[in-house]
Length: 516
Image (tube, rainbow, N blue to C red; front, side, top):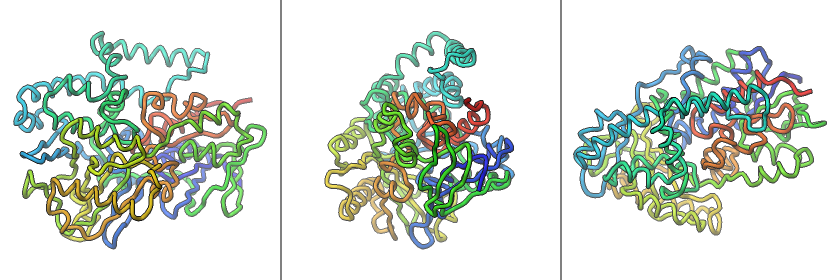
């Protein structure tokens, strides 16, 4: 069989790449190891009648321009106007219900600090001013620092001009704060510990860092500056629409088709060989697998220069996130707000509490008091659970892939118990409400989804792995092997549910002239 291109992996980035390439007139095949599309965004039933719409539930970063270019609305995709507010529970007091909109957040923050309510308006105004520049960095291929042509120089010049247009104060502020820790940055803005902890939480997802680690302000800015209303129905609804768009464009999506290896000869891609021993010939392969899986497992070592192979081995993919899914017979209620339900909640009452939860990871342990990002998707999508019942999907920060002694059934249960205990601290009735639970350690995530180290972002988000991602030699999606491209979350601008890596990789493939 011969086609123009093979896309490896039917996650949201792989489907995005495939659909865009097919729209450009190419014959595309997607090969997916699992029996379903979606990857980390796949709908999963973890207990009869109880489903979660993927490991990734935050769709606030999905690029609207990608949805428009693929006409995903025609395939059922719809966006919500804004993400639900985040509830930050407190062990003593009413907690904090935090909206992005300062007007909606005013009364809640003012109950803790009148000064912080005023500062929150200024904080959101600053985010609004720098949003365009940050979004530009994330929505375009990174500068080609190896290039010498006028196009590369013009790209650098445009980025410099965009930075300068921010104005001297904001330009200097970005330069000042980007390398700093998010704890210092937020301490400069606010005095309420609960507010600071709630804002800091997302900057730590998929990192090997705590709030006092350098560079976490940068990860916070990147998350804040692309967030908008998410996808109705979550990441699983996004994947359903992408799959439909790809098929409508003529893409052949083949499930249960694991790739044994990528075929290379003379430094060029020749095709892929499947585990079934079938060979698909092509001149372009775009892999949405993580970079290590692609370049160290699927490509023979003889095709990689030693220095490049070392760079890929040194690319950090130390998974630090686990997922716990709870099937609940009743709505999840917090002691601080009886009778109310929230779709998103975030534990951790102080920055130091977040830091203490990260500390054990350095020593290959997990915290007995983990920090939780709790989502209850069945509130807006009741079809995920039986009538009147609910699903809680919990992202657990600080669960190392390389756990001391390894991940066993006993250690998995120990982690699950720690998570339930941490949740029960704020929602004391949760234990009696649990029908079933599923605990996915980083090892489980690696084995189910094929992600090295169980890393949910296909590589750590850190300053040295954000722009030149995963390595300078393939920072613009093309690898040193002619015709082999990376289109997954291990490429710029990183992980999460955005479609950006897949779209930018497709743009690069379409525009890039063939090498002689």
